[in-house]
Amino acid sequence: MDKHKIREWIIYISMGIVVIWLILKSVGIIQTPFWLEYGIPISSFILGFLAFYRDFVEKLHEVIKSLAVLTNRVDHIEKDVSHLKTDMTEVKEKMKNIEIKISL
Image (cartoon, rainbow, N blue to C red):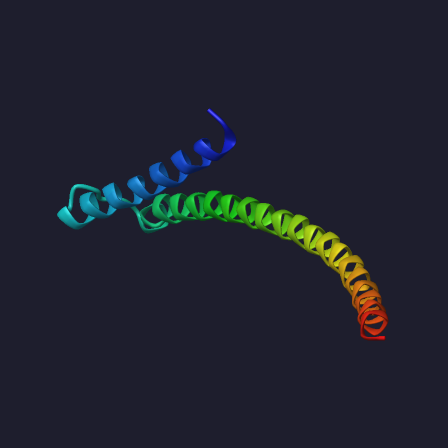
């Protein structure tokens, strides 16, 4: 399994633990002291949030990298188009000269 799948499993397992804990707590099966009562769901929520955050940051990094590549490609296209513009102005000037010669 790759790291992305492992983080997804961590997110699902931690949120599952919170849901199971909430169900058991609301039914009255779990009778715990106050410090432990909120320790499991809070730590599970924090673990899930950190795994989600890490996954989000990696995807954001991929988007930034793709955007940099796209910007680089656009710059190359812009350079190519500028060469075409100069070539077209030369062609227009030559066509004007040809039209003048034909009209004489």
